[in-house]
Length: 214
Image 1 (tube, rainbow, N blue to C red):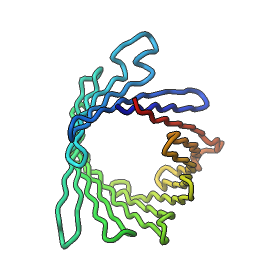
Image 2: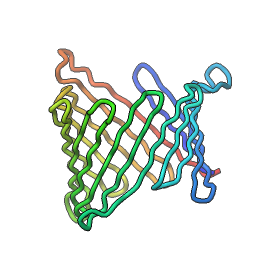
Image 3: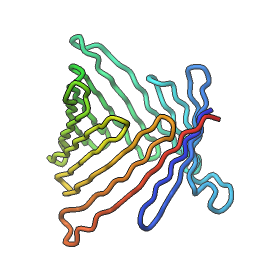
Image 4: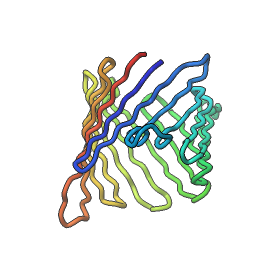
């Protein structure tokens, strides 16, 4: 059994989640809970269950809301390229979406996300630069908003990465530093600021993740 504990810290609040996963043949069973599950004594608040067959399907069940989300994955060969498809249906929110992606080569990938309920569509292009693929450029076009989002990630030797993002529709500028470790989990610090606000006060969030084998 694998256990993952994640903590999130902000200036005015903090939260924690824990996830337990066990393999049953080619299936994976997960149970996750938040601090709301225990803050006022054991309860079903924040409890979620998941059944997953990697590369095939994921079924998530939110226990307190009695809500189910289905996700099915498949792939097809089109013009000698593998097209990956994902269908998602969230019953409670009545959201239905289709995602598709295709890698033309190791450096170039295009993905399309379409929401059947709202008609929103996003097209994203991913380009990884260099022999070691450590620089990643991700422009994304939101068709419904007629706006662009941009992300640039630089990966460093040792597991560190630095990511900058900018959303043209909301004028949000973000910066994120992440450290990954195979033994100690990961640690992330992110900050964002709304450039349209008169007082440009950055919002800072710190997240830490620990992985355990039980």
